[in-house]
Length: 277
Length: 311
Image 1 (cartoon, one colour):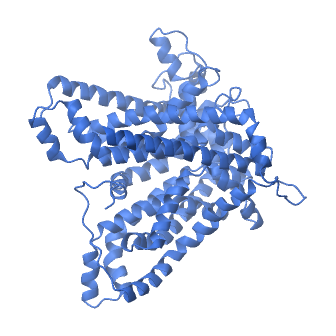
Image 2: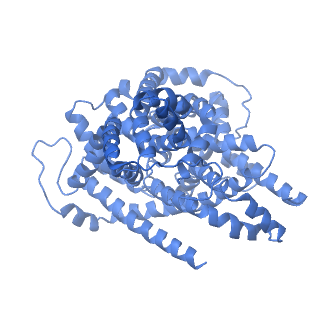
Image 3: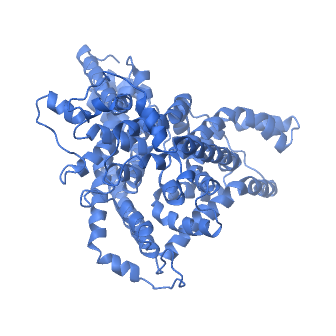
């Protein structure tokens, strides 16, 4: 198929428009983060800071307990990712390999869990966790995040398991390997990249999460980064733009790095999950 | 979901004898339990508990025991004009975000499916909003919309289009402004899903249609769209639900203001539950939201599918 030159030009113009639309807010965030107060107050802001400074970053760390928040976020995200992958992988295996009522029910739950507004879940969760004395605690939040990350983790993992030919496992069985042995030395190595991608995805999801953290964490020393970020915005919606931008920029970096690593696999995972036989 | 694919590898299921199958199933239970228990305790359980709460007068921090009050919460909701206003805003927001988002994402996915230079950059950038915490997305757009130091007003001034305005606190502009942010934030998921769908469209069919002299639009309608439709329908339905239930973006951008113009149902229910402590009432709101959204979605999906069959 050949596309005419005019068509090609049009396509590039459209692509450029998309690039601008997708990139400009983030570039503006970076620009704002490095601007001194004088430029932030100016009525004619520029794209490139005339007098770039790190003062906003220093101020951000002075104003809010960012390090504390970052370590809370890290614990919550790492804990959630590790546990989610650990419990989701065996279940995804069953869902992919066996046509049982169980697998159907699990698939149904994956879909239904997307439809329910979080209010309906958060109030009972709040009450339950309160009774377990897990409110305002990072471990409590980890538990919630694990369950919250499960639907997408299962969905991705089922796709990855399906991509491992069942014949391989059968061949191993023929060669006399037991079920456990087959799983450990044949299936697991082939699944490893998919498991890593799923874990990283769960990490990002938990790192970015806001609503549960807002409701479940009350004291500043327990709160995660997204919640602490909102403290930069005052009661009347007036924000100290420089430090806010600096902190927001820093909070995004881990997610961006992880996403850059798994970018290809996310697309692949969605592909695998979207295409069911 | 879809049948035509080039990436799928066939995974034949070996039929098993009844006895062996039972053994397998017992092993399966063992594998499933570690995930099943948290799901039951922290997802299914709370969900059912939440539905029950909707029929009680549960409040936060109250010493008296909670009582059953039947459908009283729902009766109150029926007359709660603030809630219905919020529900209406939620629908406007959900549709206002989902539809343009779908069209934009479809365009982008079609472009990314072409052999263009810079495609890698566009692909990477298309995913950036997905990687960002929603709170950061909100913060970022606050900076863009900022009346003085924001780039939007500055650009408008440069283009000689007036002095701009305070987008997020204007009664008329607040909702459209947050809708634009919603569209931006949801682009990646939709684009990636559609791109996945596009890569499953049969290429040979495309080429054959081109040989027969079908134009681009015609090729899209007769070859691409039928193959893409299942994915398009699912992602649109999901987007509608996700958007209707969204919270963090608008919480950071406007907290529901000005004057409740952007108070999405989730924000309303959140305030009801955790500011005023009306757990039962807020749970009832959640139930109504699920019920009405399910009905609407069912209607849309049925209508779309029927329309598709006729075409």
